[in-house]
Length: 164
Length: 127
Image: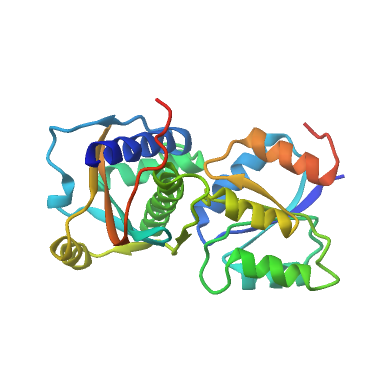
């Protein structure tokens, strides 16, 4: 189950990073999870057949490029911290919205909360409270990003696997 | 004739992406108004002549579903075409939005997808 979940999460995150932000990740199982060293994180909660939250952590070095690629800005243009946080939350929301039906099937209904930036203290508290059911690290050109899935209520069952 | 559009999304980056996609789509664009949430969106509808609204679902203050319900209950806005652009992936939920007369575009989206849906809704072939 964890391997299948990781595979689904990886496929969804990869597709969205590529199509939305023109970033081409590779799965890096060897590299140390950046979850152990907090960089910049966001969290989105969901309620449905199973409930929980998805967390995205990202190296600060990728965030300006994330914004520029999403908005089609020139490389020299400045982007604000607010825009970087906004892009991180939006990307997380899209990955979550696409990953949940990939796990539970397209008829399953989930309500997604508004994403929020996660403080280091909130992240530490979350990791102490429970173990994630899935955690992947994606290597990018100038940094890396982790996606961490927590299930807080309900039974997670894999009803659909994405096409290879 | 150019289309006046309203984009309602709490993410300024996503609003920027939608504007970028619209400009790439070849649609004849008029004014593009923007709002952070459904409540602000309704205020923009009151203040401007808007031909089509592009609305996100998950927003603070007033979400997209509540905004669409308000629009459909008001004679002056009930006929304005609505496109929902959302991360929503459930077929069941998408059917619910269709019953409210809204078209649905899934995030991530392409300029071509936006163009096709707008052309269907406004009955024009601008591309």
